Image: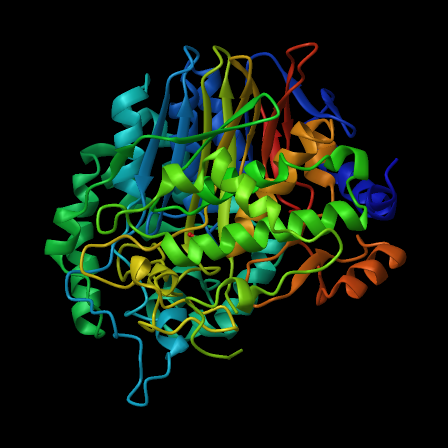
Length: 574
Ligand code: GLY
C-alpha cells in the first residue's frame, strides 16, 4: 500500500464499515459497488436511491440524473438545488457527447462595480448572503433541456421521487441536522423565510433521525413536475422570486426569469496517455484547465517518480500554477468574450509551458503572471455537489451543480421553499485588480447583464479506445479542477482502480495565493521538507472535494460505483 494511503487507511476503514452497512452485500471496500444494470453515485444516499429507482423503472442515465438532481434539491440543501445552476456532460452508448450549460446569469440590472463600496473595496458580505448575491437560476431549465433531448420516461415520473421526499419528509442524517442547526443560529437565521422553511417546527435543535418535511418546496416541485419548467420561469414561482427580490432590494425580475435559457454546448476534449478526456467548456474553466494540466504533465514520467514523491508533487503544482494563471487571464462566458480554448488545450502550447518548469525549484506566481497582477492582498467558500450516473446500455452522465456557498445566499424564496444561490461572487468583482490574495480583475469574467459567471465545475467522462473508463467530478470552488485532476491521474497515470483514485489524498494550488494545500496527514515529513526547500508554502487542510465516481474496470468491463467516503451520507446505488 502507498504510504499516503497507509496513513489514511484507518480513517477510511471506519467510514467504509458504515458505507457498507448502507449498501448491502454487493459492495467491496477495495473497489466500490459493482453493477451491470447501472449506477447512481452521489453525496446523498436518499438521492442516489431516487436516481436508481428511475433506472429500475426503465429510465436511462439522463432520466436518473434528472431524478437525482431534483432529489438532491430536497435532501442536500447545502448544494443540491433548484435555485442555482450547473453543468451536465452526457455520453451516449454510440460515443456521441453533449454538454448542458445551466449556469446562472447576472440579472439585467447588474453592473460591473455593484459589489464595490464607496472606497472601492469589495464588499464580500453582499456576495456571501442576501438578496443581491443570487444570479438568475438555471437548474430547472437545464435539467428540462437535457431531459427533453435524451429522457425516456415522462418528466413528472422522473420528478416523482423528489416530490415525495419533500411532501412526506425524510429522516435527517447527523450531518444535515448539524449543518442546519449551525446555519439557523447563524446566517440563515437572519432571513425569516429561511427559518420558516428549515427551522424545526415548534422550535429547538434538529437531531439525527428527525423527520423534516418541506411543504413549500414540495409545492414548487409538484408545480414543476405537473406544468414543466415554465412554472418556475413564467408561473407563480417566478412571481414569488420577483416579489421577494423587489421587497428586499434584490435585482432579479420576472423579465430575467422569463429570458433565462439553458444551452447545449460542444464538449471540450483532450487526450492523455491514450485516454480521451471529455469535459465542460466555458463558462466553466474546468474542462479547459484540466486538459491544459494533463497536457503539461504528459511531458513528464510521473509514474516513474511515484504518486507522492516530491518530484511528482512539484511538477503537478507547477502545472496547476500555469493552468490557473491562464484561467485568470482568459476565461469567462464565451457568449461575451472570445476565449482561446483551442490554443490553451493544445499539446504544442503545453510543451512550451512544461519547458519552463525548473526541475527542483518552485516558480513565482507573481513573476509568471506579472502582466495581470496589480496588487498585493489577502480566499472563497466552496460548496457544490457532483454525481455520476451510468445506465445498463452504457449511457453516462457527469453532473455538477451548485448554490456556490453552502446553502447559497441563505435566502429561501418566501412561499416557494427553496434556497437561492450566491453565484454572483464567482464573477470578477473589482475591474482591473488582480491581487496576490486570489482576487481576479481581468475582463473576461467581469459582471455584465445576462452574462454567466466563470465556474470551476469539472464534470468529466474519460474513455479509452472508445470504451468508458471513468465518470467523475467534485465540489470545492477553485479546488474542483485539481480534485478532478488527482482522480483522473490516479487512474490514467498511476494505474489505480476507482476506489484507490478517489481515496487518495489530494492537493491544490491555484496560482494565487501562492500556497499549495494538501489533505491533512497526507504528506510524509521528508517530502514536505523537500518541497519547502524548493520554495513552496505548504498548508494542510481537513479534506478536499467530494468526488462521487463510476469506474469501469478495463479487464472485466465491470462498472463500480465509488462514493467518496469523505462525505458521510454518500452512496452508490443501483
Ligand atoms: N461556485 C463554484 C463554481 O462554479 O466553481
